[in-house]
Image (cartoon, rainbow, N blue to C red; front, side, top):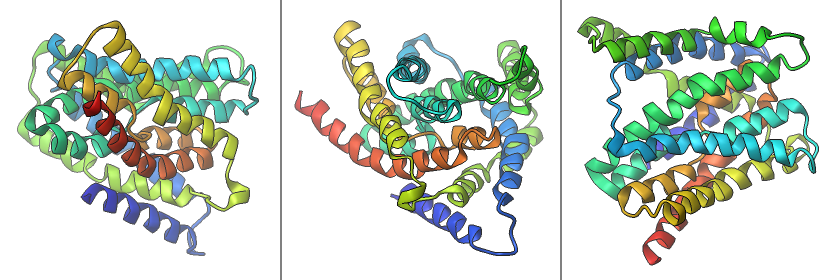
Length: 303
């Protein structure tokens, strides 16, 4: 409940800031640059370097990767029948494909499954959704942003992106078994701690909920995949095909239905990939996902 209030307050604060005449209409880009060049690399280095990967929990780690892969395939197939601007297509792939496991999922998992749920949730977030965002998410955003250009310019953009560099360094540290000095860990925590507040405030500054500014078609398809199709696909694959039962399978289904990850909306905005649609996917999708997750949890225990 605290996270829901925090979400509403931050989004409202962003909407309020947007109305201040002294602020530039692109003021959110300054916040985005702070997030993408300082907060997100710090969080990537902090958490990825210390995440313990376990084959026992392979499915929760795989779920966000599969959700993103299915999203990519779904919207590529959909564009044959429904016309979207390429930038809108990119936003839908990114925001519908990556669930907000840490921000939305952690309190839900802790409430439903206790300490074991939190342990699985951390793996699902750090080795799953967070890595998807830091790697293929950034690659996808850069590719669509450079889609009109010739050559592989987007790869240069990715390879120079601070979050990707932090990810590479974190993997080396993780594999080598080196522990970061305690002072460095504290510094990384302080640099990364404002992330949720700044990200949601930036998203609030970009929300346009006046009917004429809402792309109802794109929003409906994006949230339809995120809240309905993604959890159905995970249920079919994990439960019906792989015959998985218990807490891991349940958490994967619920995790797939979580609202869009606010971090990837900031990435999409920074690459100028329809920031308005990205903000609407988060601003509308996260509250709706709470209702969907509650309904799914009820259905799971009735089956």
